[in-house]
Amino acid sequence: MRGIVLVAFGLLVSTPALAADDASSCAEGITMIRNALANQPAEAAVPKLKKALKNAEREQREGEFDECLEAVSDARKVLGR
Image (cartoon, rainbow, N blue to C red; front, side, top):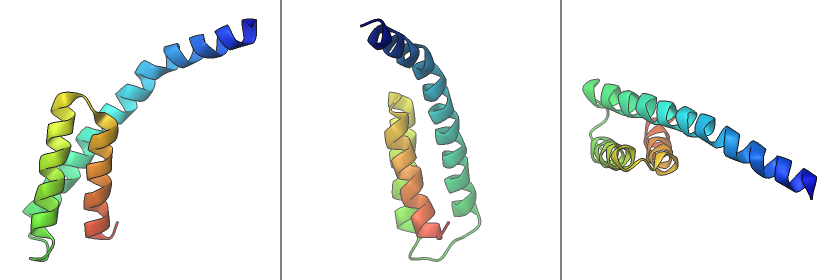
């Protein structure tokens, strides 16, 4: 029982650190998408990148960083990264 309590405590303590990492990665991903759009990507990629940017920014505002990272991942696929 004591081991379960220690594991649960460890998860609670590490969660804020993981959220901070996700928040940082989300912000970096949004910057990456904006930079890609500024560099005039292939015409077919523009709507997909704009959609990914819109979704990532929305999820960032809502604090849903895991979903923001999914949108960033979608943009990376479009860019072939």
